[in-house]
Length: 260
Image (tube, rainbow, N blue to C red; front, side, top):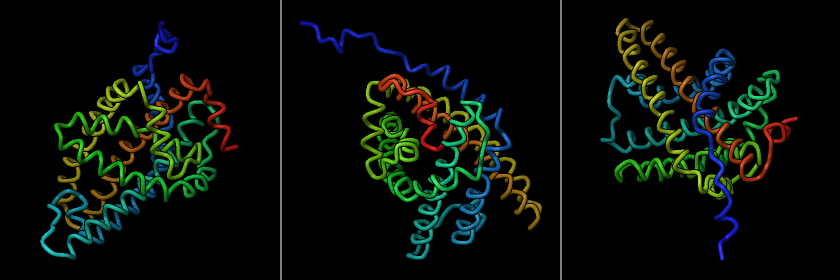
């Protein structure tokens, strides 16, 4: 006897459509994305710079691990970056759905849900980052697979308020669609890497002009990092929405209604 669930056609994720729409939202709401993500990212960079030195933060020097103080400083900087990432992502997830539905972008309305999601999202992001790092050390592909499994962690925590159950929920949603998600993520990472290369080149040039140059380099780096983070956040938000639509018949309107 044939299993009915196996006999049913597999609905495609629609990677091309998701990537195209993510770019459309990013450039259509370019100013809002920058404004929304710039401040928390800047705060994170400033704190990291004060802890480890701005030359390290800007990529002009290697991080040091020669003393206990260096190790603690790098750990503090890592945790701060994860918290900033969590808040920024939680803000951008909400913007992505309002943009997709052509609703007004209300930056102030996003702050409360973002702060509520920040702690579980930051802690689980640290866990996923450790797993991702281990996976990348094992010939890269396992790391991409790990990222695909947990890529919708942020929207799950922000939208469904799943808290520390977010990893399990993300794992369930991405099941059977992980390879298409890996493909989308590879394309996204290429975009982010290009932005980072451009940023490092520009930062190296600008930072050479004394203190003023260092300040301008800092602002420039934050702005370009914001674009990369914005694109990834929008992309995973759309992947989440598509998975909910395929697996549960939930529309984007219903997803976004939790913020009303």
